[in-house]
Image: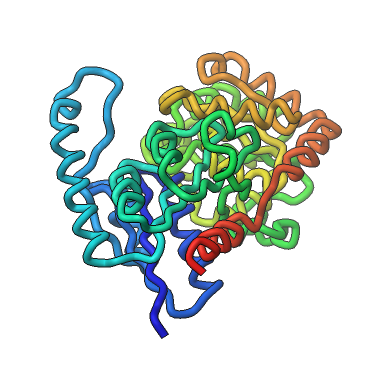
Amino acid sequence: MKSLKVIISGGGTGGHIFPAIAIANALKAATENIEFLFVGAMGRMEMEKVPAAGYQIEGLPISGFQRRLTMSNLIFPFKLVASLIKAKKIVKSWRPDVAVGTGGYASGPLLNVAAGYGIPTLIQEQNSYPGITNKLLGRKVNKICVAYEGMVKFFPKEKIILTGNPVRKDINNLESKRAEAFNFFGLKEGVRTVLVIGGSLGARTINLSIAKELKGLAGIPVQLIWQTGKVFFPQAEETIRSSETKGMKAFDFISRMDLAYAAADIVVSRAGAISLSELAVAGKACILIPSPNVAEDHQTRNARTLVDSNAAILVRDSEAFAELGTELKALVKDEARQKQLQENIRKMARPDAAEKIAREILNLIC
């Protein structure tokens, strides 16, 4: 029996890489005799993360286009042409049955070439406001899997399928993990617990705002699981030590995010698409501080989708240092508000997104 061959392209950030790997895993679980080839951008994190997940990857010499005059912009056209040439070689030699894109630099050239050869193509858009690559690809691909309603503003209506974003399976059924979670972090059960996350590199605005409010939070009382990123971690540890607060734990990186979610009653987070999808599945009351350093301000647009459904609280990055502490302390004290936010964000959860996307991919070729 001939094996099914799938090319998946996406990367640059974990928000593109994780969905790509989750989709591959779902396809592998759904059918036998299937081969995968990932295509990423040379020097980007997918070249390390994808092989670590057990998949083969090829790199294109593509890079991003900056929104200002830089040397990298001057060589961008040459990198694009080189990437298109290499993408053609990959597609012609590997002969995939289907090509899937999850966003990022490499998905543009790869999906463009695959569509040009008549290969069935699908893109997965994580955000409520798509990036330029997926907007352009939307005209050429066969199907577009989205995570939010209202995407007809950006894509042809007949191509859109609402699937949600793939999330880690270990964040389902968190209630059964609460006792293990408190033990893992060395915290007490029965005390309101706040999880602060800013991505693997940390978020300076969030970190500075939490550091400022540490003593005030301790007086509520509340426990804190604070993921700082590597750069801010020494400062966070010193702040906790000097303030002599109890139940405040800082980590440069949290390896067991399922347990962090399980312990948390409230989450303070950036508003990346995958983070929001995880928060919905986890069913957590959250305060969102969108990063201002992303294309098209898409994190604010993502957050607005939740806020408009009364499923989250929004604090702008520029106002976080002054307002985050006030908003957080008010929410910690307001149990009814927490429950309301939890109920509303759970309504937006799509825990089977990866399986739905896998079915759509298989429907393209079977």
